[in-house]
Length: 128
Image (cartoon, rainbow, N blue to C red; front, side, top):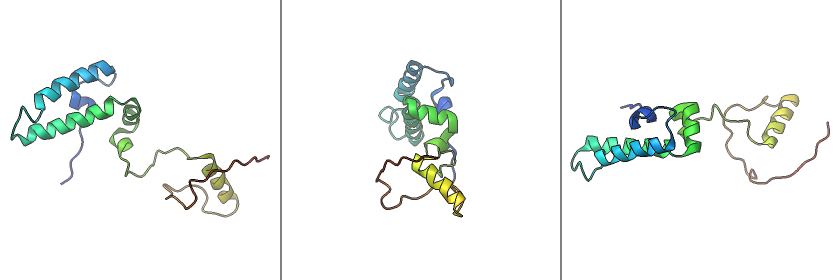
């Protein structure tokens, strides 16, 4: 059973350009209305309360809100394939460049799993 998530702004009933104060005010109003203690035995209210909390968690955090505004729900899914990710570190960029010149795979192809030693950093000066 696949469920689609509703737009977080719609869940809280605020416009996309809502201020932090407006988001907080809408959240508090809805949280009081749908709180499980006020709706004992009502699974629909409990589900709505979870949805309201999730929307508030994202929209009240500036970094999460920016990702959500740019990429939607996919921008918040840590398990999603990072199709919109930046090139990574400078070392990744240099490795990709050398791979393409030296007959490697020719650049990044999606997500690379961590390699042993990936946490080591070395400063290298290169003159071209």
